Amino acid sequence: MTHPANGNVTAFGGAGNDQAAPTGPKEDMLPFAADIFAARLRIVQADIEARGLAGALLFDPENMFWLTGYQTIGYFTFQTMYVPRSGEPVLVARVVNRDLALAHPTIGRFVDIVDTADPVTVLADFLESSVGTGRPVGLETRSWYLTVRDYHHLKSRCALELVDWNGVIEPHRIVKSAEEIERMRQAARAAEAGLRAAINAVAPGRTENDIAAAMYSANIAAGSEYLGHPPLVVTGRTTALCFAMWRRREIKEGDVVLLEAAGCIDRYHAMLSRPVVVGAPQARHREAADALREVLETAIAAIRPGLTAGEVDEACRRALKARGLDTYFRHRAAYGIGIGFPPNWSEGHIYAIRPGDPLVLQPNMTFHVIPTLFLEDFGMCFSDSVRVTDEGCEPLTSFPRKLFVAE
Image 1: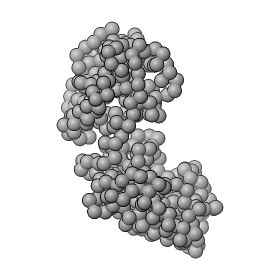
Image 2: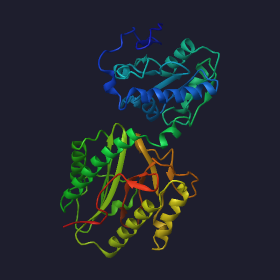
Image 3: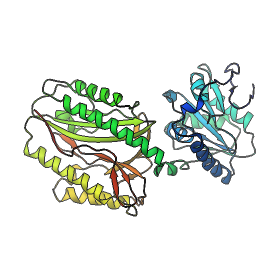
Image 4: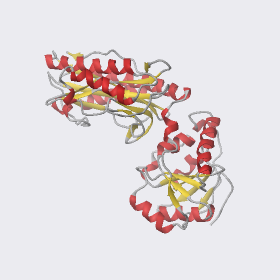
């Protein structure tokens, strides 16, 4: 077992030999300037010190990214980031993630987990050898990526006191910086490109896959990275089923086409949705589209600093109730957006505009306003991504607010 200097590998549980950190332009891996991440680390370490902890273990890839700029698609296997009360974070993860992790100047050390090792045992060995037993270690126990099994295994295997440590980073993600908002503006342009291409591709005889391919192609060509959630391309009666996806269905005359596009720049997302009808729309199609457009514009007009999320949500519901369509509006009016990793492109688990929510809106909060109706035989959506300004609301996405017709 070895304990090399910062920037090197520490091997536990038969993980292998120490290796030198990769050389190269580490700053290029960061989405923002290094001093932004240094300031974020100071915020987290101040909390750790104030709670009397030795450090804290992050399991959420979104929070790891916020803190260090580190992103990988390799979080489908065990990984955790140890943040000590002083010094640089340490990543404990599968060995194949090592070079990518250490290409980031914000990560000080990497602990190998080879494929024949038990990840929790490797983590416990690292904690006992490197942290000591004087202070407890905090755990992100609300994270989806810390399983119940691994939690119980770590509690029984590790000699250190382990305590819950939740909700420390998330409040700092809600109000966006100028740099974050700029990434979201770029993401909005990519989302618009994808939606435009998808609408143009809708025609009888084509398939949902044709539309999805057009959306993805334009989205990526416009600069988007991989999305935190697949976009929605659904046709016909299946549009009435929330979260149904494209499945090679052929587009037919009279179909409603539900399209929700997104863009991602440096893991920051923006989304929007517009409805399409193939052929002449029926009166109820126009009624649903008009109602949803009204709700979207009601929300944008209502959003401003000082108002609560619940008050904005109520304004949206009043607009639908006046039209007798409120029973088909079954979800929150908007959810928070920003950092996203698959399978989720939203920050809705942190903040949202929903019934009775006491959250007070502040400038530079960002939302996806997404009024949607799921009727008996079709569903429809009008949505935009927005930013709370000093005096009101600014749409980040820009696209004609109308029911599109594919002839």
